[in-house]
Amino acid sequence: MKEVSPSGAIHGLGGAPAPVGAVSSAPLASAPLSSAPLSASPAPTAVPAGPFDKAATPVWLAHNTGAVADAIREAGSARVALRVRAGGGWLDAGRPVTNATHVLDVGALRGIVEYTPGDLTLTARAGTTLAEIDDATRPHGQWLPLDPHGAPADTLGATLATASCGPLGASLGLPRDLALGVEFVDGRGTVVRGGGRVVKNVAGFDLVRLTVGAWGTLGVITEATVRLRARPDHCATLAVEAPGDQHALARLLRALREGPLTPIATELLDATLSAALGATAGDADAVVIRLVGNATSVAAQRRHVMSLARTVELPDTVWDALRRVLPAGAASVRVSHRPERLAVLWHDLATRTRDIPGCLRHATVERGVARCAVPAGHAEALTEVLPALVSSWRVVGEVLAPSAWSVLQPAGSDRLSRGVRAAFDELHLLNPGLMDATT
Ligand SMILES: Cc1cc2nc3c(=O)[nH]c(=O)nc-3n(C[C@H](O)[C@H](O)[C@H](O)COP(=O)(O)OP(=O)(O)OC[C@H]3O[C@@H](n4cnc5c(N)ncnc54)[C@H](O)[C@@H]3O)c2cc1C
Image (cartoon, rainbow, N blue to C red):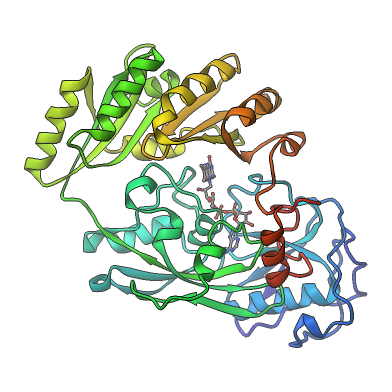
């Protein structure tokens, strides 16, 4: 592993320059780091395709923004592509990164830079974990309401880069809504800042919304400022048994959406997940609802929910359990449509996937987004149902067997996206393949 020091210099470089695009465990180049922009290079050409071998890949460890910039410039000079990594917990997600020969590890870029409770804003380095942010904000009665599936050790930078969110996203904000500012390093090694550290910002080209969800293909996020929320005074989590009949389910979901309720999360769980989380005793699906407000408001909402169907009260910890319930290495897709169509979608998804062993399904009711995850050994079975799902619904792949990706339209394949990619990472040095149509 090579270290990039706080001063920004990469130690231990030596030996001959690696051939363009080749897999090499040898050091990158003997030349000293250049601060010249890549555009000064004679003829920029994208790094050609080749395999990405996680086990054999050399790792560059960056400790600060300058070091990230130096590493990217160095990679540009040597024409080697980089696999960006933080905690490394979800590197199999997204289209395979096909031709990166080196890992750029930004997990060591850690720490809260600025926290102003009075402004409900926090700035942290990209490798700071969501758990660290939770620990810092809890004593002030605040939180960053991002609850993506995965572990508390997930990093802020990766959560924003992948636009990962959980059940809270529908009411308290998606990653794009909660990110106020980002600092990132683009494919030329230039440090770029978008947005700011305050809630109100000047209008302009919104680099923050562009970077969030770009999976590191436009730049490596090094720091981010996020909007916090006040933690609710009172919470209650209720599970309502969901009818198996599609029309009855549609009526229940409508009643929950349109009733006198202000839940911060409403999640539909299949029978297996419901039983695992204690939401139902038997063989039924369930809707789990997280109510917040003052004591009077929560009590009134609870009464209303109980009037709709059989209900059990659950501990609030069920929401953390839901984040971790999926098996490691699971293959998964998101399937979505308008929220009013969720009962139809849910029924179709259940019918098509019910024979896949270990298949788990859940859906965020307010967003109309369902998710289906299968154990790693059954990824091919998920691949088989994809064409039928794609023909009726919007499908986003998360982790899939390599052959399955050809069924889905790549997120960055349109002309505009390709143009944006070219503007930020002309050589395709950063996570190549992940959002590309051609690799
Ligand atoms: C619906 C959904 C379900 C999910 N399910 C799971 C799950 O079951 N298990 C799980 O572990 N995670 C899951 N995630 C992802 C998870 O919430 C986090 O996004 C991820 O785990 C972050 O952890 P990490 O630091 O280990 O990231 P890594 O695994 O290191 O990186 C994840 C991706 O983000 C990129 N990236 C990382 N840091 C940066 C940066 N600073 N700048 C630019 N790009 C960067 C990487 O290149 C990589 O492509 C899910 C996300 C979604 C949206």
